[in-house]
Length: 172
Image (cartoon, rainbow, N blue to C red; front, side, top):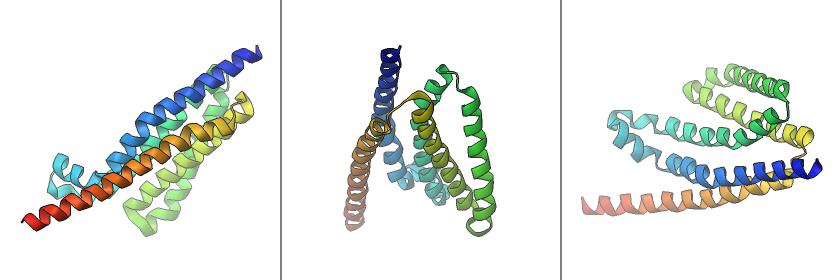
């Protein structure tokens, strides 16, 4: 039975790596081009919403990272644990909203959501390790490699966008 468990854990790690290879560049890339994308898609009247669009792109990407671990814990019968993780995310969100909204307004709401997502992701990874035997080293490599590549891509897109905007400004 142990080889079956190892095979399932290996499949989950490969799934996480494959998902992250696709979603990290999309999420970070869209966050990088949020300003022009928001203006093009929603119009220039919505240009101030770009910072919120970028934040939503990032934490939506983080939410996707957790999905294979949720499936693994469901298959292993740890549904109560998943229930507790949902409640943990909700409690962290409410507490962070109470702390951040009075001073940061709408951005405080987004920061509260981001914090809740990160806390739940960390606890989901620890729970997958403790209850399902998933190696955190394997998890880290399946997250860090795609995140690093996507970050480099995002930086290149950012600098290319700045260069293009500068060239367009010279033309006008």
